Every structure is written in C-alpha cells, then in structure tokens.
Amino acid sequence: MRELALRKRTSVSKLILAAVEDTYEDEIDVIAGEKGLEEYLADPAAAITLDELIARRHSAVRTKV
Image 1 (cartoon, helix red, strand yellow):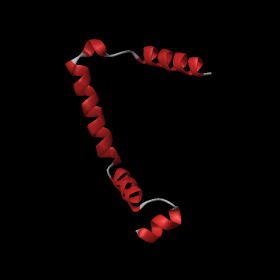
Image 2 (cartoon, rainbow, N blue to C red; image 1 turned 120 degrees about the vertical axis):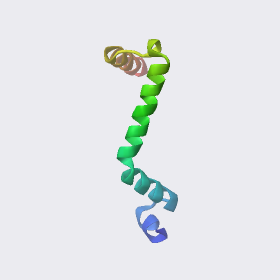
Image 3 (cartoon, rainbow, N blue to C red; image 1 turned 30 degrees about the horizontal axis):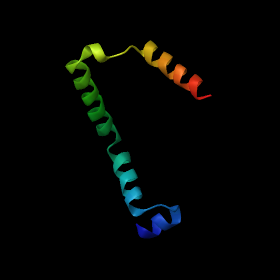
Image 4 (cartoon, rainbow, N blue to C red; image 1 turned 60 degrees about the vertical axis):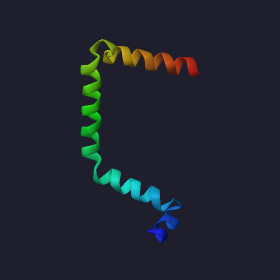
C-alpha cells in the first residue's frame, strides 16, 4: 500500500478511504437517502422544492461573479 501511495502521490489512508467508498458506494447512498427522508419526515415544512433549490443556486452563482 505504501508503494502504491507513493506512486499515486497520496497517503495510504486516502487510498484506503477511496477503496472503502468505492466498495460501499451503494450502501452509503442508501444511508444518506434514509437520513434525508428522516429529516424531511421530522420537519416537512423545512423542505424546499426542486425549483426553489435551482433558483437559490442560480442566485448564489450570480452573486459570486
């Protein structure tokens, strides 16, 4: 692992983290989705629509330029 990390100019820990994320990507996505659903169900009024999200992102991009 150390040799691979040197060749890739990264750390062993970053290689391991990337491997774990690649291996468990689907499961990690499921967990994130479940947490998002739990947050929504706990306070549905705090949710925004996709159109509102897009508008906010466009507004944020315009203010940065």
